[in-house]
Length: 298
Image 1 (cartoon, rainbow, N blue to C red):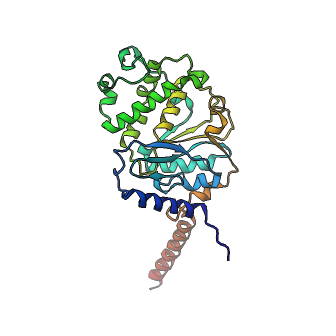
Image 2: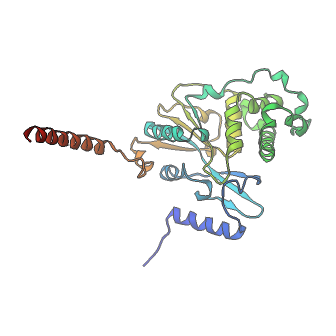
């Protein structure tokens, strides 16, 4: 009989091989001293729904060995009838608020940094790299874990180096990019600092219900989160164009929702308990009537 492995089985085999090569265990914080490489995974809609809340090491393309840590993350446009998906994400957000950046629109990451003049210009060296001694003295950054600061600086430097590749960033100065990353961006920095690489990635979910053009701050912050191994989902049930105007088509997936995807997220502890409550209430009423009239007859 012919045998074919499912995608999930293949992913589990890949994980086992990776662990055998590394000789490492996966416990909370085990990987925090690593420098991760985020890898965007391109999937079907069903795979996206299956893996979105999974831990990184249970996702396809997770790679761990002595020299490498590759973290599979999503960058997705959830288009059309994504209301049920948004509802499920909001439920997860209610349970785990520190793992989600839930945005009611792009306006929340478009805020330009205030008091940019208070950031020393010397924080950016002539070659576009970060002056670590100056950056470490900035209050918002001094509280980050040392290795997390290194990863953050590397992500900012990458945005500065490649800013010419995005038209909207071409005339933005390196200092403005640095400021957009570290100012008006407190929750992103806190989520990144508190996250563990083996856990489910921190998530930014934008409910794009209000047509709004992205500015350079929104683009910089989306790029930063992507490079810090966040999952990014733009849920647009009104099918507004947003990231399409700035990111090349091959840099994100578009999944079209039909409104029947809620079943993928439901687990045994989330099933609808309304019928059980109704029958329970009905049974209680019947029991009360029996006892009430039984006592009177007695």
